[in-house]
Image (tube, rainbow, N blue to C red; front, top):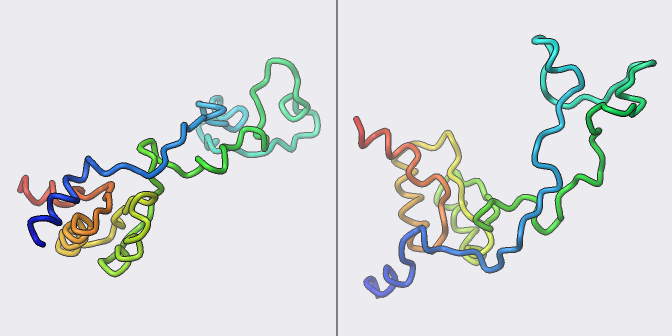
Length: 146
């Protein structure tokens, strides 16, 4: 059975999702805070305008678009990665076992604070279960180069 199971799973790149719907983004660029480009102290992250006389709040012609519910993503494709999988953060091998029956929908992402030794064990077990790991070679690359 040992030789057969390795052939059935194959390499990580051959793993495909069960369904891969087309992901449609309604707006490719981000919503930035009005006048964030003028002041260095102002963060780019979106803030709703509250000014009494502000032309942006009053939707004058020539001002950028506001955040609206209509720009939201399709519910079916909301958190999908470009390869068609959903992310599932994993910290140990036991958490990886949860994906056993869902390996065609979810891909494992090893948490940032997991050690190299546990990382190797997770990647090895994921290959046995046929689960895709998005960042399987993250800390392993640094170790090999040293």
